[in-house]
Length: 470
Image (cartoon, rainbow, N blue to C red; front, side, top):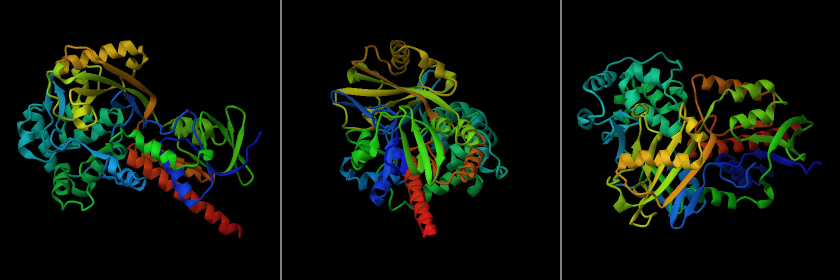
């Protein structure tokens, strides 16, 4: 059985797929958005427990990249935008069993203020001297694709990696400094060396440059009722008839003037163009019969699994003042958790005053075994960690766990080369497009940008085909 042909078939209704569909909707281009689960938004989802909004995936977006902020404004959500706390914004590091503030002025874990950096007891004197050597070192070899560990070892020594860089990368990518590519995972840092030679000098010059007139109130923002509002609102701008939920794509085949997608329930869909925004391994499965080499390239992009564990407590039951955004945990501390966010402090006004919500992160590279345990075992292990770290003697009145199996793409060394090879294979399949978090940016603004840009490419290609035919 074959349904009526659509011009464009989009596979995957996370923020990338939604952004692409919305771009096509505004342009009046026919499409069908296919999603294997029963809801839209992917990892962007806000659950709730009474008056407590609970983010299951990301809790905010960066404002230095404008796409998410601009989309919120376009959708009429500007009044609902909520910045982070401007008074209590300390981030802590668990070091030698104690929470210690990360020195003020650290940007991407690179010091931009001398005295806080010199006074911190997180790093040894020897480590500080090695870090300051960055001021005098030459650039690395252009074009080299180093791991994050190799890059920082060369510029700043090994102690900063284990103490600061590794827990920072665990929080962002759930990845390993020994495998992630600095060029692909931290392009801002890679480009600092290329442009300024010294990371510290580069950060200082950027910090001291005239403020951007379009700069937002805080570096990170969310929405008052949760980040899920962005996904819900974006989805509401799409025609329901153009959305197919609970249906999984099985494989893709070439037909005259387009492609035929076979679904797992036996139905087929025909379209002129196919946009795959699903995880790379899902796209690899769909494309296997069409192009096994392309499928292999996509399967070469690794993923790791992670989860968030959220607890609710009464403030009076916690010894730590929770005056900050949260804390990071180096592997050397031997804890289950990668870190935690003091959600009620980070986003003031979203939790009743006498309560606090703490969101913890587990899993990631080399730590995924914890996710094989039952929920009650995970709750017990995570609770034991934060009770010891924050001085909590009571049990939480709220506890939630959200698992993200194979939810974190890893930009390992060679990522740029893989992307170029993927793009070359795609030239053999006009009308097939790939985009999303597995490719050029995992953040919400990056995914929105990729969805919008790829939709525009599809529109341009359609007009070009139409022009050639006439």
